[in-house]
Image: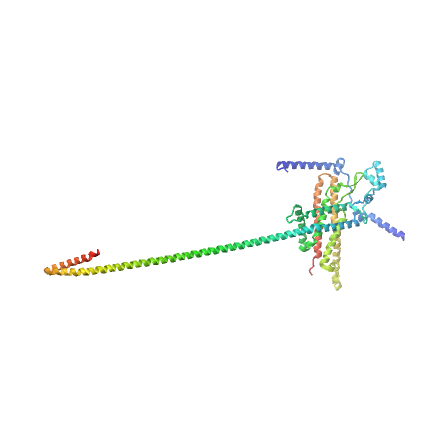
Length: 192
Length: 336
């Protein structure tokens, strides 16, 4: 029995020797080393996580937060600026409208004033013409009165002369035209 | 930098200098020594897939088979005029990986601690001031955070991204810093010397230690399954054990059972693929840097460094983003 076992062991060792590539220790597999590497890695992981990854990732987060905030602030400021721009625009428009209105008012007032002045002038002119007309009437009436008065005298004078002269036809006509001429001269005289 | 013709001259001079240096490197590198018989500038590097224990010293010596007996045999062999390599072989001095259950501080573990400290200093110092208007360092860190957080958000949505961020970011930065810091020359020239040769480096890129990608993969796995469970409750397991239809007597339920089985397997295979993707890339990078340095000691390495910077970034992105994607699949509510 022992002989068989030892021969099997011998065979195995013989085979192992014949296939040296199978010797895993030749590649350096070593339990304690493996455990050492595992511990080493876990320690490294822990230290880095605590002292390097977490703090710096937090910084990265803070920074992206900060960037986001400042972008938002910039957006807000831009919106505000746009808003105030709108307000200014509105005010300008309002002012423009107000100016337009004032101008319109002034123009209206001027037109009204002109109209009034025109009316006034027309009225003045009419008054003046009226007065002139009545003056003329009066003058004419006075002249007619005077002519009428003078004509009576003239007729009497003419009649005197008619009577004094012989009443021939020719003399008669001469007399009449003479009287008329004198009468015309008399009536024209005060007018001239 | 002077302007115009002066700058051009300086650039030309630098170019010529670099070309000469590269030529010298080529001649005194491994290729040149094979072609022209020149003395090699560097000795042939020893490449180990597994990390080396460095503390305690007894474990280190044990894994290198350095004890009174072997050292004595070695010095005897050396006295007989044998080469270092031959003597070591004769004395039985060779590196043997740590057994799977034995604890020791390995050089990869030290480099992982180193990276951890650098990460903590970088991030904790950078986020110490926490001002709304960031300084330079804080701005860089915030840029990194926002990159990771932005990616998480695009896949998981803002709320879940916030919760997943610490784990995803830590995975990303841990992989990235480990890969990039491993390009520092200190990783190559500081170690424990025996007979003028570095037998065990003090630092070794943590990604080249299978345990580190495995630990990350397990964390990613647990993280994903935890949130999957939180999102679906116990119903989450229905995805893997889809017996519902079969129990109702429908034979087509067999397909569901099979699909559930596949889901479960793929979930577990992720751990393996996560592990070996990172391990493979980091190991390949390390070997590439070592080999190019050995072949052409100067200048040529710079190109590899550039490549490795890119690879480190890509691996960090892949590890983190795959975790995010798996998480998004796990928490997604299927529409029925």
